[in-house]
Length: 143
Image 1 (spheres, rainbow, N blue to C red):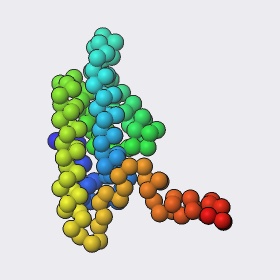
Image 2: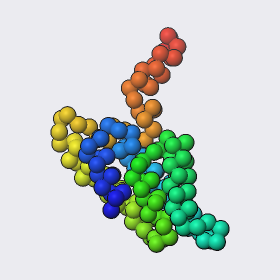
Image 3: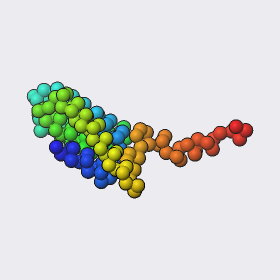
Image 4: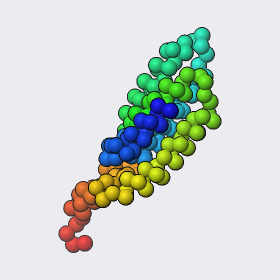
């Protein structure tokens, strides 16, 4: 339940934060969950469970950071999924719950004129107005 509490806190409390945007929510959960479950396939003689539960989130967070899709609740889900008590069905349930949580978050947050959620869906730099204004400045003058 911890990852979902953190997810809701991000969606309603930090609506403009990059970690609370749909891209980070979905892709961060995909990366962290898959890595954590892959760690569970390593035999316990090679990798002790307590070490697995430390390494899986660490590797997940590192990869999320490298890809630019950091999502803190996915790090918490990585701890749970790497415990060995969950399988791929639970991974997809985590992912489904994350996707479904977007619907009320979008509806409720956008009822207020002071909030906008999400601030972006995909790649943030290509959707901003500054990106398009820079693109126009590189056009030849005769167009």
